[in-house]
Image (cartoon, rainbow, N blue to C red; front, side, top):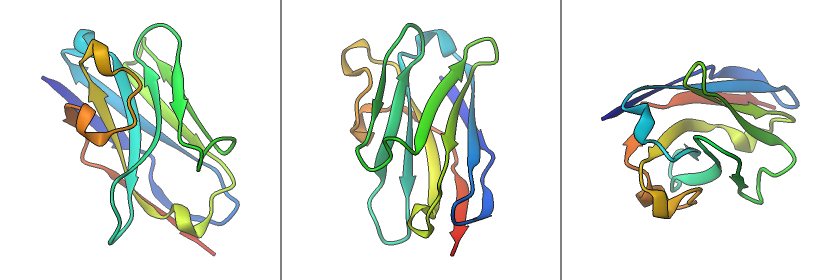
Amino acid sequence: QVQLVESGGGLVQAGDSLRLSCAASGRTFSIYTIGWFRQAPGKEREFLTAIRWSGGGTNYADSVKGRFTISRDNTKNTVYLQMSSLKPEDTAVYYCAADDNYYTQLNARASAYDYWGQGTQVTVSS
């Protein structure tokens, strides 16, 4: 089992930056990919970005390219989501997820991920 805990959400103003953290514990050696998703009220869960747990490789949704950056610190078993130029439409609950399947690395489908955090709320005011 892998446990994931997100942190760093909050209330910010449009144009601000925010960094979310996703701390992994448990069988972290089994992780191949960590992804970030978000879900706004009344909308489906949306893929944002993913990173390989070891080695290189990232994947970004077109909607966040150039504004969001994913990174990791394996010494801390933590993946970060740096968000800049935030907009009110970025308001959502943000989730990180772990995929332990070699064959679905960097996948954008939520169904490919086996473990999920509880989510952290990000609210962007105009």
